[in-house]
Image (cartoon, rainbow, N blue to C red):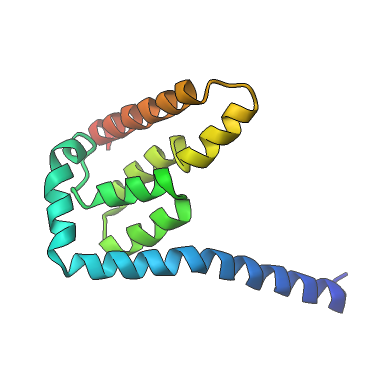
Amino acid sequence: MITSGTLKRGLHRGFSTTWTLAKVVVPVYLVVTVLKYTPVLDWLAALFAPVMHLFGLPGEASLVLVLGKLINLYAAIGAISSLGLSHREITIIAAMLLLSHSLPIESAVSGRTGVNSVLITVFRIAMAVLSGILLNLLL
């Protein structure tokens, strides 16, 4: 049975979580949207297009991967939603980020547990690259 106290706590936690996520997603979405209308995103896309071609992704997708790997998945979601990528491209990016996201934070946590943080970071990036290449071939 739901009591009024339970409902209030649930709503408060829900709004608090939404606000926390929105503080990351909305600014990234706005910045990437603005970058789409400037030469900066085109320049970055052209620079990274040869590498992104290995994964079957446009050069703009490099921004999503960098944000997801260095900041967090919510920043990547904000960037994905503003770029208008296809379902196939989003699937490839999602798989790559699943294997290697939030690298600075997770590497520090891994290091504190006794795992070689450099080794685990290299392994995670290698697995993300491998999954991107394989998904590009299979999808």
